Length: 488
Image 1 (cartoon, rainbow, N blue to C red):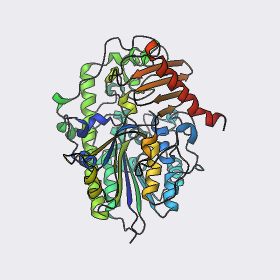
Image 2 (image 1 turned 135 degrees about the horizontal axis):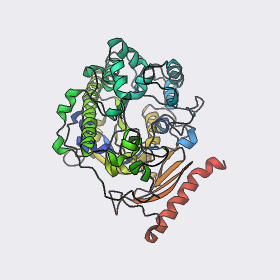
Image 3 (image 1 turned 45 degrees about the vertical axis):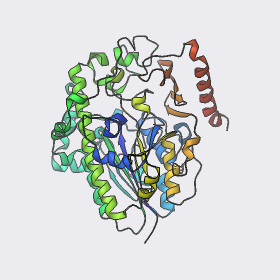
Image 4 (image 1 turned 30 degrees about the vertical axis):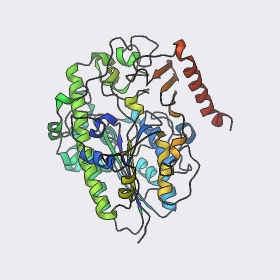
């Protein structure tokens, strides 16, 4: 019997941390995720390494910032190089069986090839994902991808008769990405992913220790829960949108065009594409309410399946498991008048949940817990690069060069700054101030936000003389961050 722990890594795509009951949300109940948090080390200052899916996911896999892994864009042809050392290959070489259920997105999706009336082949992508070191893959590579391309999920959805209505709804501009899933709940992408993972874990013969990445593609848009899950949402307790009149009126703000529209489509937040005249200001309050209800309902569905997965893990491995719960990035969900994550450095997107339950955590946790036996809360500045070294330490494997620190050995407390990157985008924070720099064709912006003085992050302080030192210090850290790559 192998005594190495199972490693269960659960992620949601575009999950706002304050949508969880653990962080105070009362509009839905998330007892399973909250229960995991109560047994975990909870990192309240965890930040993503990118507000885009592909770069963030490749940071998880490599422990490297996007500019170092080479996988830095959702849109430019820069798939993760198979020669870069990654978590799958390291764990497999160390005796683990590696598996993934749900979304990969380690290579840019060919968006320009998508068609509203047909679902296209995707075998080349699947083969590439497996080549990165996977022994088992059940692929549902994003909700929209599954209507554009035939991944494992959409092949089965098509046979069941629900792919066409799902594709029609996803392409329907009048629905503006908000609609109930057009089929039984068991066929929702997140139910399929959760069901495949729970079944696989329950059938594990334990010939090798298991690494399982359960990668839910929700609550990423389209906002599409099964209709019955909307009954789980108490609309009277939805968080009000965090907005300030005139906040983005200045044309030097990153999201001026996202909110007000204007010529061209570049630089806008995701939600602008579905908005009337591509301006988020034109969404009605009724639309925002439906969007938030649907988003919360999708989180409730995911929580059900997290419960099923954790039950399977307990049955198979007892407490001999390392369990992560996190997200690749968050979602604006109407705050600042936006939805999506493109070019966003607000806490709604950049700051993400991170719960880590170490193996045999019951006794260890109780010695650290607060008086009410709730989660062990930490304010260390951590990020997604820390996943790989944490998993390798838990597996008893040698560390490899990375930009992360193991959260099991406490290395995460040493970081004083963290960064978020993407194509033409860099953001740096010391935990209080955030410096955001966007520079790409048609876009040239600088912003400084102060999380302490203004937690709502409404004001751009880049030209405020009282913030000159903070802005200069963070700009210097950005230069130091890139210089080893520029002049190795």
